Amino acid sequence: MALKTPEQYYESLRDGRITFWDGQNIPDITKSDRFRVPLALIAHDYEYDDPDLGHLRRYKTEDGSEAHRIFQVPRTAEDLQTRVEMLMHTSIGTAVSGVFMALLQCVDDIRAVNPMYADNIERIYKYCRDNDLRGAEVITDPKGDRKRRAHEQDDPDMYVRIVERRKDGIVVRGAKLHITAASCIHELVVMPTKGMRQDETDYAVSFSIPVNTPGVKIINRSFAPAELNAFDYPASSHHSMPEGMVIFDDVFVPWERVFLAGEVQLASKLAQSLGLWERTGGVIEAVRMSELFVGLAQLVTEMQGKENDPIAQNSIAELITYAEMLRMSLDYSLRHYETTPSGMVHPNTLGINAAKYYYAANFHQTVKYLHDLSGGLVLTLPLESDLRNPESGKYILKYLATKKTVDVETRMRVYNMIRDLTADAYGGWQFVVALQAGGGLPAQRLMMNRLYPMEQARQRALAAAGATRRPGEARKAAE
Image 1: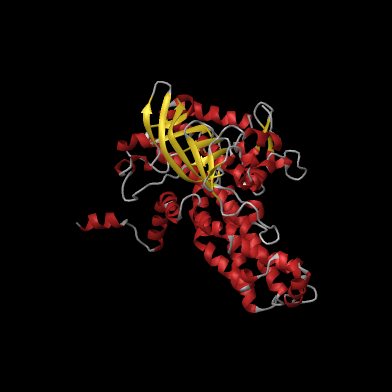
Image 2: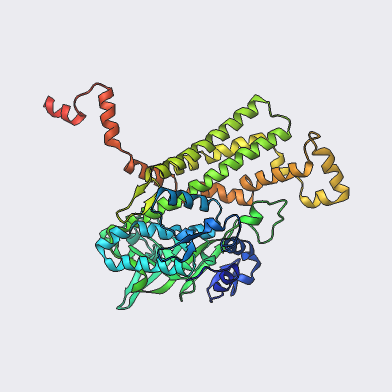
């Protein structure tokens, strides 16, 4: 059991995995320009000697060894708070290994149905933890015709399914979409995308396999080109991560790596558990991003000399409200944590779903305030190359000046960050991710309706109205 170095992380990816990008089969992703930025992001998470973040990345396991904190099962409120702090400074390529928390959150229910599956979950979790490996959240199926169930599709492979059961394992076929960092990690942790019915047993399947397993192929796409100027693209040039379409072309999965194979009653539990941890990650990122929006809004306002303008102050107040609502929602969800029978502490499920819904439902409106404060320069600002050119640069320095206290280059950097975060490469990705990551708005509405203490609310409403009988009881009395 040992923590990897960044160099060992790179070496671990040279395993014969089949991955495509822009029509090319890339035999060694560590030598590809397209993977340079995402691999560097994840490799940074392997820098355990970092004087500022090393203590957040490492924790002591039950046997006294060290592991990355992404694998620490929260047992106390302090554990949960430290996990959130760690995720504030962790790449999404490492954060997706939170999928193991989703599995472990369900392990008690799974053990009651099939102890072998529960043992498999704990063994694979420890294997990845002890070898410092990363796993991807592999959940969303193509779904085909959304009006039909999985087994009703014209093509039965529209949902990942079991096509053969053997004495030594199962064979699966299908695809999963939108899988963040799929080509950059070590294990593909497959979960059901939703609940399944009794006539869909072949589609109630969960397992974990190495990325280089025969029959696995990954087709990549990213919001950012391989090479971007850091001045013009301060977010995209440093934070891109590929999304993969993961193909399972008759892939063999040994029984010791299977977590679910037909037990439909567990499919929705796994999907909901992963949703909780995905949405928690989304809310953590939302808190970080919303604070950044407030800071950028204040900077552009000051640079324009409008810091006392009431309209500008109103817009900034709206951004502050958004940021504070998200921060308080996350804080509430951590303080009012829930505990599984085996002792895992996890964020309040209703609180996280409400926070994620608020974040997603109001994200685009919030960006509008930032754009309104910034103006058209967000889109029309000249490039760094024009600033550095003496002939054109002198005009940029002259005509983008505002106040003597404002440095033009700094002003350009602020505007570039706004554009990149909200109106360009990274921004386009964020506009969709804010809504869709962890399930779209309907998924959060569904969970809130299920989890809200509705009977308590009903009783309080009746009492406030002075009613002594429930509506149904009044009808019976009248009869």
